[in-house]
Image (cartoon, rainbow, N blue to C red; front, side, top):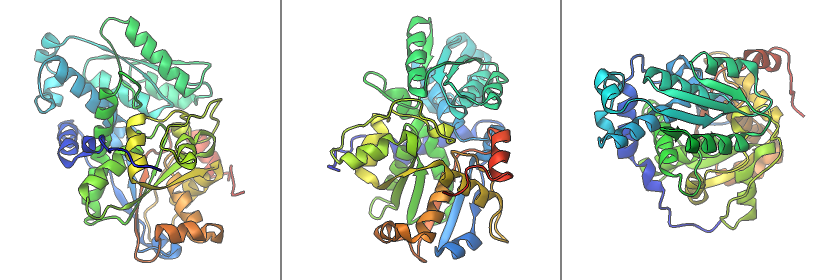
Length: 389
């Protein structure tokens, strides 16, 4: 694809991500999530190292998304008060002074589960209100997890992208209404940028835990904000020798893949029901901010059928002897399924060669969620649903 002026790369500078990390560390109970080192699996697949960032431990919420929503809320409140976000840590945001200075806002969002739960949790902790809309087909367990955080939550008879439009319209009609969404559109770019910076905390933790440069980063994309955040952070961290970035999508919601295939640098959208077991990736319209980073820095875009994720879930749950097990949900385990297919199936030997994947490679994956739908997780891991085609 033709390169752009790369104007959004600076959003994920080391300084910007460090500020987000400082904010997250102010929360009681903060701890870096584990980085599982799968030495046995790496040897089996012909890699030098395989590392999986396990986000099932994040603040007890079973997913990484809270990092973005909470930081965006803090940045919004700080801006409304004329403060820097470094002055609006957890202690201030939950104190009497903030209530007097700011009062209460209503944060609207659309979600397939994890983002909405993170927004609801952060709003509850900070004394704010949250309204969450979920697309048709949402699992009851994901709905219940959000409702338990005190948010007003609904399941609508539309897909994720239409839920985003619904949340934005309601926020515009509501006094002190604010959209907290990790995708951008014309006139709505600041908050999605803050959410991406919040995601940077996860990437920064992983970089520190690896104690060295990954040669490859495989990262999944829904709207693409996580993928853009990870690629942007590591491109800034290793500007002279960045890792190779591989963007992974669900086949029925592969808007980035289609944009890359077109090769002109323009956005592409996928419509319809976006049916996939990877609910967190069921987004048909890319975030233009993260797309701009990815078109400049991604090395490959992959479109994956559901069995790839299911295989990854089983491999992480029952790894090579001596490796730690990782409880990874449908949207979290697709990277494991991908690296297995690329390294073991000679149908992908050209891709393997093009990416330079061999016994010198140190590969980083992000398991972005645990078993956020426990019943469905067991059907796949225990009962073998969505077996390899």
